[in-house]
Amino acid sequence: MFTNALKRVLPFTLTLVVGIAFGSLMNLFSRDAANVAPVAGNEARTYQRAKRSCGMRQRSLLAQTAVEILYEPNTTLTPQAIENETFGVVVLNVEFGADGKVGKVSPVSTLPDGLTEQAVKVARQTRFNPATTNGEPVSVTQEKTYYFSLGDRTRF
Image (tube, rainbow, N blue to C red; front, side, top):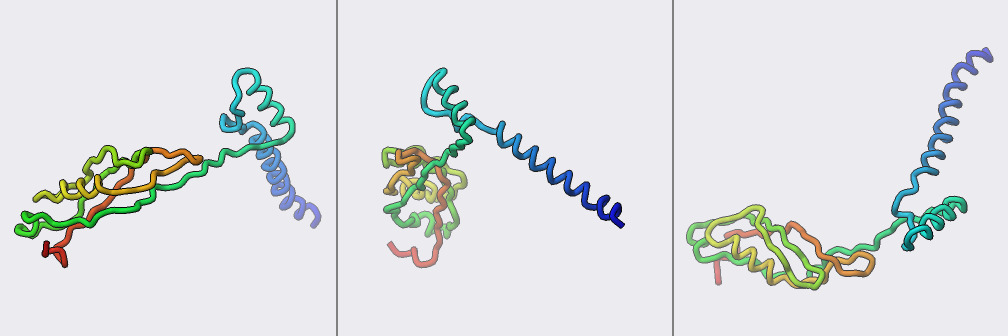
């Protein structure tokens, strides 16, 4: 009876102990470049060794904020689109610059009758607060979707 219980519990216990030991070893050796202090040369290696010996672990936490759109005009149909009853979606890749200005605008999907150009015009008129990383403004490229429909937009 005791040997049956031992046969069932012993493999589980050994696996658990080996797993914990292996995990501890992997944690010890998983110190990566993000843990290097912002000092150069031998000082950086000394600082890193000191951190390991003290058991200190520094995680790189980036404080990031997304682009905040302040103003974006409505899309309007062109006279050709109304005449031809053209409607749909235009998707653009829009670069929101760190300087608060729209940079490169490139179409992903287009529509005829001047609607792609209208979407580009709307994208260029967008006002925004730039994205930030650690408090510093950064440029980001986002995919923006612009909708054109015949619903209530037939009047100019």
